[in-house]
Amino acid sequence: MDLNEPSIDRLRLKLRYKVLYHVGHNCADVDDLVQESLVRFFRAEQRNQIRNTEEFGAFLNGVCRNVILEYRRRVRREPVMEPDMPIPDAGTRPEAEIFEMRDAINNGLAELAERDRMILRALYLEGKEKEDICKEWNMSDAQFRVVLFRAKERFRRVYSAEMKRTTASEH
Amino acid sequence: MVCKKEPIEREGVIAKYLSRSMDSEAVEEFEGHYLGCDECFDELRVSERLAADLRASNLTWKQSGGVSVLQFKANAELTHSAHELEELRREVLEQSDSRVIIDLSRVTRIDSAGLGQLMSCYSHLVKNRGALKVLNPTPEIRKLLDMTGISTLIPSFEDEHEAVRSFRN
Image (cartoon, rainbow over all chains, first blue to last red; front, top):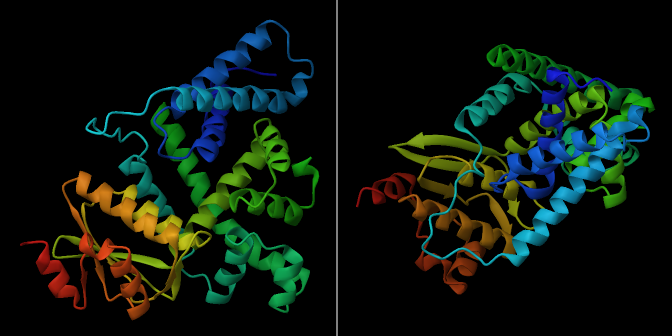
């Protein structure tokens, strides 16, 4: 396991994604939960408590899950905020991030056919199985694959550009 | 392991994760995998953007006289499982606009989750010294807004210009 600075940043990004998935964007403590997970993970690594370092993702996932569970228990125990206390706005996505998302979206699927859009919606938003979608739209596996990968390819380009921009701004 | 699967199968796993239709055990397994696998994490992020676009596609945003107007491009439901609900949340609660009109003319059904979301939007905007108004609700939706008392807090209008002008009063 190589724990240099870029790989730690990458782990932080992944953990942030997982934490947001479970606690939502309105949680003001996301970064604290990520940091706590990383600290516990590195401590375990230094003490050689990670048996299979090749499969460290599962271990890190367990650490992060415990951190989230402990956080939820703590939040339940703590008294609710006073009604006239200002609501923290840290859960709101930063404006630059929203702007970038809107920008990416405008670049991504502007020219996508309505039929393709409906097929992709069934997969990504309605959670339908590939087989059911193919049956419903009377299409073969190969046709489904083309729709899916054509759309993903456009977004892969947007994502790569975003990652480059993020990396450049960090240095 | 997810990345050892056929690409289309992997996409199925990612789609289930993003649509939250995966059981908790499978979520754990997938998260344990992507935390250690850069390739699958990148694919997940790419698909997330794709899903964000698909979600956004039914709700349009425009500015009219300094007021944000949100309109559905096609018929929409503001119900517990509808993606429009999440999109509405993102467009109102995560933006800095404080004067918002939601055009309900294409909303065909609304349930308690949808009404709750409207009230969350209202509270959020009032806290930010703004206001929420709705435009052209169908008779059924209007009846529901009246019955629940929401119409006393969120006024509805039949004309967009009139609704925009009402923010100046």
